[in-house]
Image (cartoon, rainbow, N blue to C red; front, top):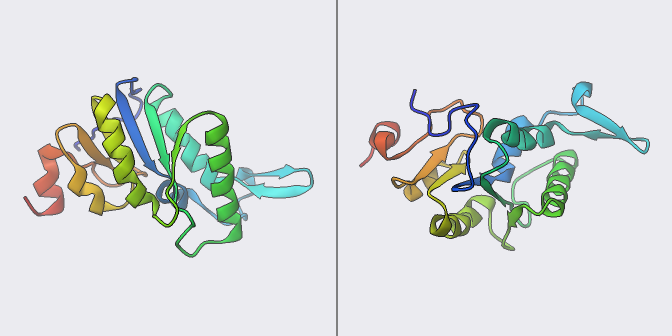
Length: 168
């Protein structure tokens, strides 16, 4: 299987990872029934399943790449309050840790990713887009790759673009 970011390979400062935060977090969100991924904070049980999925990216790809975390504003899809709370917590944590967070009022995260890709391509050798949205495949080049957040689908680069998408 063709993979652009093999599991366990730590990226470097010359690499940029553009993250569709809602896409990644939605993959991991589970109702609070799974108590092993929830915490009691000042008497309130907080579900952390979606947060776990997002922050797992650092375990998978390392901490040395430049990450761009793209958010929806306002959140445009149907979502539970529990899930939205986790998205807000993620936004706060990432901003406090001085990671690049990108959001434009009225745009979806996948739309905002276009802006982040433009910025990342100016100063990074390789750019990886983590999203479900295959519409972003139009941005694939020799140095820009589409990566499925759960690694369930093969990543898409120039070498397998036609095979994966069925078009030149």
